[in-house]
Image 1 (cartoon, rainbow, N blue to C red):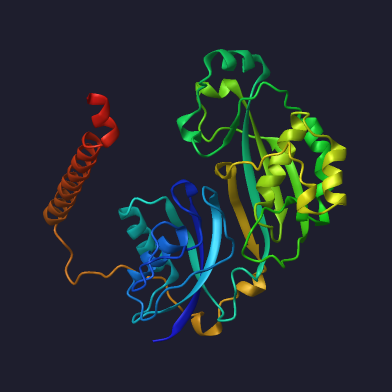
Image 2: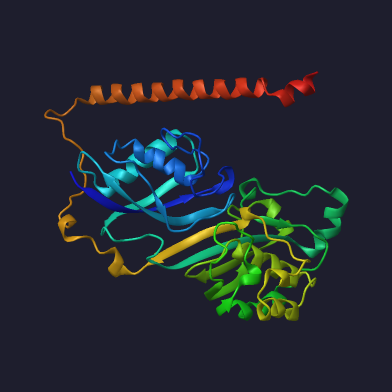
Length: 359
């Protein structure tokens, strides 16, 4: 039995979680935290029955409500059996699926014992999604007050319904101010974690391009979708969301190029323009993360690790037996579905809000 270090890639929808990082918990015995992505992944990894307690070391720490297409973490696992990375992914995803939580492992691989998912990351790419009401529908929105949002975009995109103009060309003019090595102290949110952290960061690129809905519907005719892409090695607390907030106000002509330049020329929390609000978390996605290939080289002792194969039965099952097994599985799933549905209906019927309406 040996301890292997695994690099995990995973994705999640962050709406229901308090964040990706495990929170402090009063469950001192098991140290479980079902309110965070990390806590649920660690709990799922416990189902593999390792000899040590799984502890993920995250590459990125996204806030509450932020989503991820591709994030990563490393952990050390000591298992009493041989576990191919593909088998680990399959079993963890099976457990997460049974819990009906929006987290999925993308892949896993064994890395060297000195690999660090956070320190070895060479770049991170983020996406912020905007949907701005088209000029011809602004008056209609004012009259109706409530305006349709596609169900596939609820808590997935930031919808802007204000009656002010939205000039993307003005945004493109200020983007060069963010590229390169800058002091982003003005753009950092208040955090009590580390007040001595350096606020110097290097952004490789930032751009705004036309976007689209995740699934086209007739409602899309009311909006112009915009995607803001940011590429850098690391970011400050709330830096991207505060930057997006600045760009929105620039597009709405509420602040100017000179106002943004002032925030860079005078890096301080006191230089923040009070006309700007931090963009909400639900429009932000950790899009991708990259490593140097040499840091991912498989250790020599694992080069002969074989792909998992299905155990073959000594005797081939008859066709009738196979049909019977499949039929029984379908029946078991139907019974389980009916039980879950009945439980959900009962909860809805007993909901305090609905009972108050009936009265």
